[in-house]
Length: 116
Figure 1 (tube, rainbow, N blue to C red):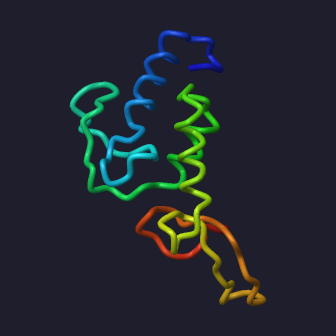
Figure 2 (cartoon, rainbow, N blue to C red; figure 1 turned 135 degrees about the vertical axis):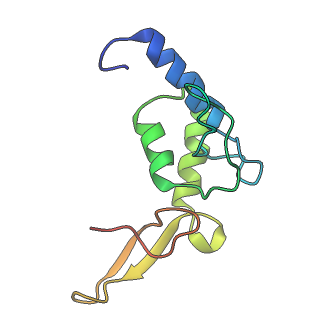
């Protein structure tokens, strides 16, 4: 919406993204994924879904939520070590040269670093 200079759509998207922050009471400082799908930008969601790394990063990069504290807390969650409840992990390349890799899990229920 920002690229297309459509301020009405940009505002609606921003409200939706902001409403998804803290949606899951078990994860109050991240953006949730999954909606009810009954209407456009349906904020009714499923709180049982895992927290996705992509959701945290794309919301930050898209500048969809203007609340700085939301973006900071979401990024802190992504960069927190998995053993402390975040997504940051160290993994080993078992197929290649055995290099140690540091990255983030795809979701809070994932294991191993994302890498391609």
